[in-house]
Length: 253
Image (cartoon, rainbow, N blue to C red; front, top):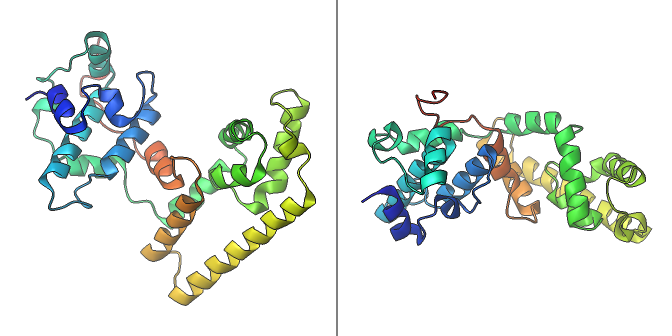
């Protein structure tokens, strides 16, 4: 049975993009995120005794390898078929090892280094203004949706938004420009309470920055704050981990 037939059987669609929850104009980063999110649900670590889950994982890995390869993706986009005899599909690959290479374990240090590079970057500014427009100036939602966003960042982020409004880059929303002091105080109080709870939890558990438990606690904190489907963890792992799945034919014409 070919890859497309297996997709239809396992995921009820033969469209490779639909299986990953993306569209045919997706960038490599979006394909990688889609693969991460879809494969995480059926990864062998989570379902070691489920043959169907393992089969789904293998199929997801193969279709990702197809879409991430420029030549193979072009064939699929133009003809709606995949080359079943390509090296990608014909070789006997260990797809779990392949997945591990793409998404290595995220540590506390990785998170801290990402935050250091992300904060103050053009990417953060772009994300911030997008969230500002999407949520029509609601700073509560903006801060909980922005990667690495915290109450401590609010003055700096607010200045970026005000400048963008002044320059006509974004619309002026009353929820931002006319936000009450009461709401601002409530947000600060909530942030202080969350910080205190996190410090107490870390102290009670006797954690340090080398502990896996601390890594998990940080991941859970970010994931619980995320209002949209993309969690901090999946964005970080899928967007910033090593790229893979390149065919040995890449670059040949």
